Image (cartoon, rainbow, N blue to C red; front, side):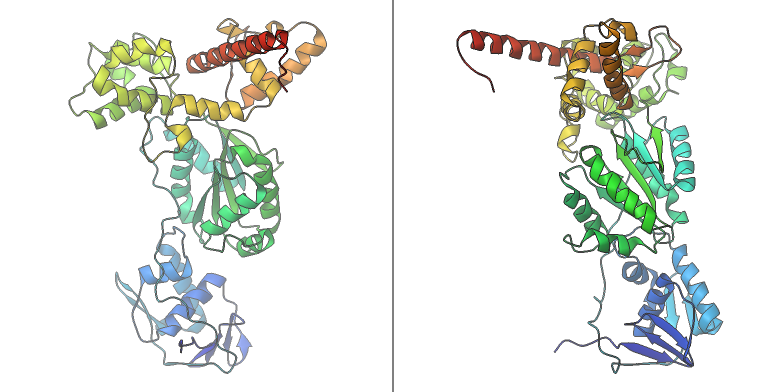
Length: 469
């Protein structure tokens, strides 16, 4: 027969009722927070024994990454309620309830909690960041002061890495820790809820209302990564959480804004790139070159930037627009081909930029796949305009988008959507303020050729009597 955990504990003048989650002193209710109650329940169940910090973290904050000083905060509160000498600190190891304690089941027994729960990291370990000090500082301040922050940027710009670093920096401010949810594979609202439930160690079929209730009283940072394809579902859930979980903060990475009034947007640009001819020492201070050098050295310890190859390195950074994913993929080619060969073959297309990390999501294993992901998020009319932009000059203005005021206005709306998703560059200081990036132009040109070939096949088929429905 499975042993039962007592439904209540008694120690000195105190009673701890587990089912009702009450702490009483001589029948009088004492104010205690949810986390402090859970800490006391663990200590009472093992009264007189040492309970390590790791065991307390695993039992009270399962699946969450929290700072150890959160335990100290709860212990301090408990000592004020039940006496300073009631809980002993074993330096560097843990805590022990010193009061004699008895338990009984006459209020009804509850199933025992697992003896130990493996403490899983709730946040991914971010890779090394290059040239992102200011971004990290700015995003950290936004997460501190605003309850919903969306990091916007094109695929491969480093949204996930920056969000992971910002979440870890913010941890000490959230007493209930942080939870990381990758919704990149979600296809429906139910998938988003299931992913959040799993991250919180709830059953994946937990109803949305119960997930919201679980978070209602928690001071927690919830990170929703890769919300691109389910932005509407994410927005609806975010609105509900903001309304019913007043201490919750949300950090979202996406290419598509949630369009909520509470949303604050952080637009993440590519890494800074040195201009041609920048001296070696100065060029190394730019994020793009620093990342390229570090990634190549990681794959070939004999590689070194010098006066002979710095021009090619800067050219490669500029050709790749300082996009971190593109730099990562290019760096993987340098040990076998050299900087100059990689640079020379980029004009042939994006095929060279493939073979990403085996642990990366499929869309991040090649630049082509990353851009395909972004392209697939566009409406058909937006895709058509994106393809047409490849035929325009490097920098162009609104007057080159179409003929007639009504058509131009519609196209401006579509162009604004492309700018919003970081697929088109906008520089308000120029007379012709719009441009495609180098890699974007290569991709859009290929899509334009592909669409033209499809149209020609359809016309040929139609003339032969075939239908394409």
